[in-house]
Amino acid sequence: MMPATPPEFRPEMTATPSHIGIVACSAEGAALCYRTICTEGPGLLGRYAHPEVSMHTPSLADYTARLEGGDWPGVGALMLESAEKLARIGADFLICPDNTIHQALPLIEARSTRPTASSWTSWCTASSRRRRSPAFSG
Image (cartoon, rainbow, N blue to C red; front, side, top):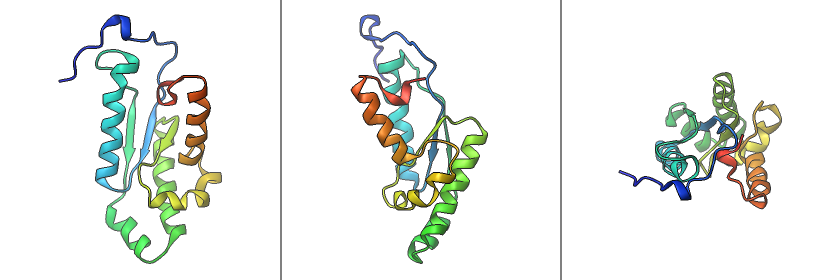
């Protein structure tokens, strides 16, 4: 169990945390991403707190068939399907914790209704300059 964050080290919440959508490919990457969000949350938001998190993943076999066939538009289509489902349930932005399928992001970025991983990277950079954690900003 994670120790309680003493009140003097707990920042005051100034905004509601964003709803994070995880566009998942492998169980390992998705689980690590989810766990990281949830374990880092208390340090920023207070004891036991983390932002709302939703995840969508088609079967890994669906991704693997497209990857092995070099079908990057097909990989992008799977990612976009996940992104659309996550947007419909209220995700404010999307994280894709998979290095391989990131290669398809340029194929779908313009069609996504939410900031995607590459947009997210830019936002993280800008937010770090403001000394804010983007995952927990409103």
